[in-house]
Image (cartoon, rainbow, N blue to C red):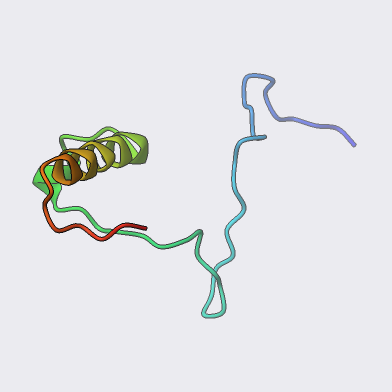
Length: 67
């Protein structure tokens, strides 16, 4: 087979996604408002900020459920 894909294209990190009515998602998703999304570059940054907020709330004994 003659591969014409350029060597600089690394496709190993791509995730395959099914389309159509029976597809399953990659997990729960949350939609951020545009002004909030502009502050965070990626989901890792959002999670880090939320974990920080949870820690501060618990330290100040605000009513947050324990998981």
